[in-house]
Structures are given as C-alpha cells and as structure tokens.
Image (cartoon, rainbow, N blue to C red):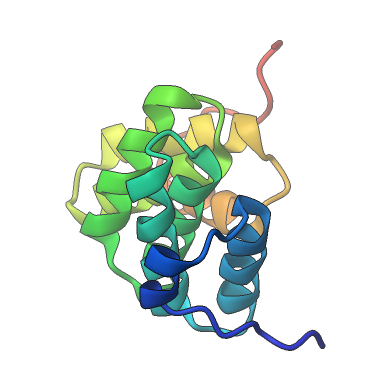
Length: 143
C-alpha cells in the first residue's frame, strides 16, 4: 500500500502544490478511511479552483462515508448542476431525500442513479428498497 503524503493546510500558503498531487492525496485519504482529511483537502482545492468537479465528488464521497446525509445532499446538488450524469451525486442525493421520508422523489432519484451506474450495489439496494411496493419493472431506459 502506498504511503499517504503528509499535506497540511499551512503548506499551501507557502508552496505551490500540483492539483494532481492533491487529488492523489484526497483519494488516498478516502481509501484509508480518513474522510475528514480528504474533505478538508477538497475544500482547500475548491478555494483555489472553485469549479474542480472531482473535488466536489470527493466531498460527496466523504459525506457518505461519514453518514452526513444533509451535507452530502448539499454537495451533490452543487455537483449535479455541472455534471448531471454523476452517479455518486445521484446516490447521495437519493439517500438524503429518502431519509427525509420523501419516497416518490427518492424513487425517481434512485432510478436516475441506476441509469448512470447500474452495477453499483448501493444504488441497486436503494432502488430495490424504494421500489418494493411498486410493480413497475426496474431496468435501463433506451438511452
């Protein structure tokens, strides 16, 4: 396993760090089960590059790992404005809406997530969970 680079926020003011290195550090932190650190790095990146979609997706993934559904919903909505086909964002948004008890909206969002990534087990689980009382067939649309 690769060693996780030690990057702290105070380094950014003094040293130019490549976006690729930060992206790799965020991925390694997420893989190591350190979503708080990955989220902090993503926020630092977004201060400098406010339209960096990969950082928004990492924030959504970190919120999912931390079970911060409302925070994940907020980041997912921002990401979907720029990338409407992002399965991670649809999954997070669908689950957050489902937790609020808005099952019709959640069902629609789970369907959209399924269209983006039909083999993701969490998406399939959410889709099954919200469609259990409906007789409609679950499957990909023609697109």
